[in-house]
Length: 111
Image (cartoon, rainbow, N blue to C red):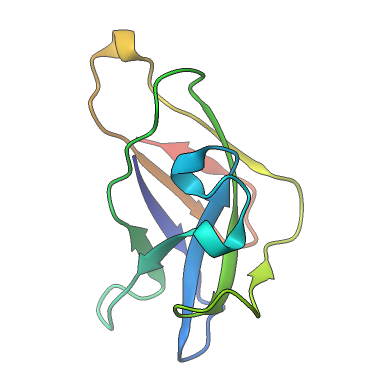
């Protein structure tokens, strides 16, 4: 699974992170959140590395967090309820998926 997060609400020196219920996305620990990266040409889209999600429930609950690059303290959690991505089942034979969403927007897309 890879995350693609649209977030124009960052300041220089900040990063977008994904944290959630699965250990693959930090088990709700912001210190273990998955960092996303962007470039001048792709901003405001932030992308994570490819993550291995353990087999089991294909419901991935997560939130977006913004904070200083490489630091645990000072992270801002996105408001609202937790996001949910319904990942492809093993039976679908799909080997990867991209979860897309936007800071402050409620929709989550899995392609």
